[in-house]
Image (cartoon, rainbow, N blue to C red; front, top):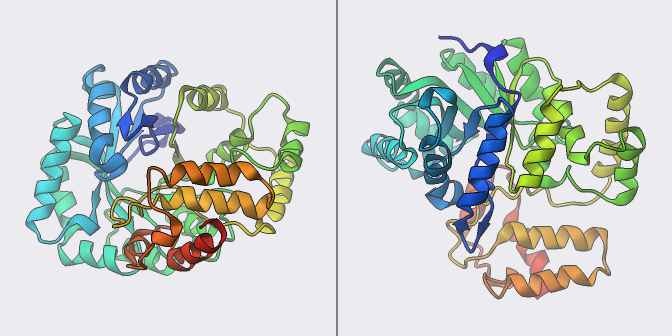
Length: 372
């Protein structure tokens, strides 16, 4: 059963960065965000087994599944290959996901984060592709695909071996088009050539493309003074042919309001606007920044409880503004509730799950020298 791109909302609600305090998700605010999103005529929700340390699927149940008719929304979640140690784990995890989310089936189901090496090898070892097709036959999955963080060569290999995949989710934004690690432009081209529907993740690069230096933001504001900087990044990817849905991991109602505004009476990027985006891209690529998207995959298994994305956020700010005392204050507060950069024991757990393939151990040594 193919996917009709015309029935998919261009904006998808990513449930990876929900508002929370002390690891407790703000249920009331999430409910209000869900209501605003649904009222705008949009209905695609993306979660995963590992988001919010397992609490995201539960949040979907409480804020969405219990409050709306099942046929009124589409829910997507993912199988985490790194949690599969034996074949029986696949069914155990899937059953747990159905229970957490409070549903009998998932509209979209993905093999999570296929990349060169470990994850792809696990999915092949346990024949997860055939397993997914069986779940489709049982009616437990409506559409089957995968999210991808690997090389273009691996993407072609996966698609050649598994033509039954209905869609692919990739990291795509205007900054990563030429990124030598992500190579998102080539990934997009491969999927476009094969007419495979694309779901976009990280369209604003973990927030990096939502807030920038005032002089960079001024270029956008001069053209569209009433539009947010984030809207440019979202419109860029949503304007690309073959893009089915653009996921935004919205963390508060303000972001939800802004994104709904962007996608209501949607205006594709014009040629003149693309020139501005290309100018901004060149400027940003000239700045030495750690390419962390704050997905927090590295945090869950850190034995030292280091909030690695927040450490990198501090370093990025200091690289751009060396004398900014607020960054040091932020870090002082951070280490009251999590480990210091110098606490890193170089176990490598974080590097094994980082979708951006960052040299985290070396970066933490640099951070420790600056901050500790």
